[in-house]
Image (cartoon, rainbow, N blue to C red; front, side, top):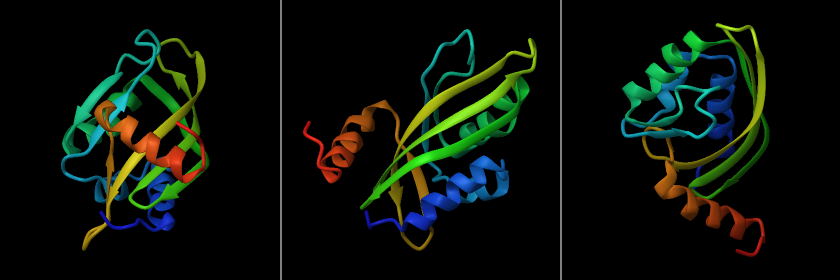
Length: 142
């Protein structure tokens, strides 16, 4: 893969933060893997989605059905070569109970840049490889 411009990753997170579904769809690779780990009692849509259609359903329908006032803010971003790591915070309100939730999220992303710049969000099988690459780039021992 080619190095990804930081601006591409920033544009993706901007689209995610304002819930611009058309822009998000343009960023996602057809074979994107999106994994959400967390307490199922709070986030019943946890698990892995493979493919753009399932990820878009998660972002456009499943999550909004359970959560209102959803907001994601990327706090820290490291882009190196074809990988990126983003630490952010998600806040939302559970529709059923009105309970406010707030938690940190870490995304590890593999990015394919070509004639069409698309993101491939990595699932568990790729996280270790990308995390190691990012630690190495940051000078952090394994």
